[in-house]
Image (cartoon, rainbow, N blue to C red; front, side):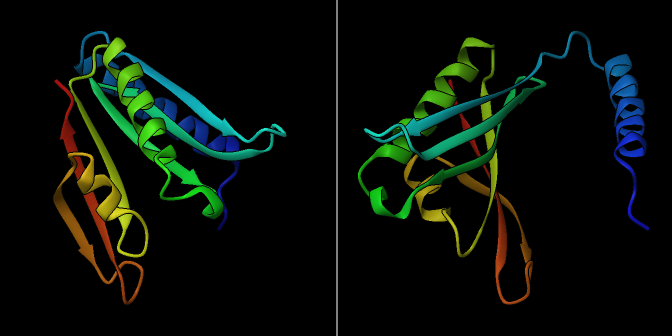
Length: 132
C-alpha cells in the first residue's frame, strides 16, 4: 500500500512530538544553497538539515561539466559555516560507493558505518565530521 502524504505527515508529527518531550529546545531547520552559471541556470546545490546540534547533508550535487573545479567544496563549506552559526558541532552524510565517498573524505569526513550490498553490488557509507 502506498501511504498518503497526510498519513506520513501525521506519523512524523507524532514522532517529533515525542522527540521534543525528550530533548530540550531542539533547533530544527532546513536550508538550500544553490550555484548558478552566468545565465542563471542551476548547476549545483546543497540541501541540508540542522537538528540536535548536527548538520545533515541531505543532497549535494554539482553539474558534471564543472566538477573538479572546487565548487562542491565551496558549497560544502558554506553549509558547514551556516550550521556553525546555528550551534552545530558535528556533521554527517550518507553516500554510496558510486557517489562521493572520496570527496567527503578529502573534506574531513570519516566513515562510522556502512551497509554492504545497498544497493546490490554497491555500498552505502555513513560519514561524520567534527566541525569545531
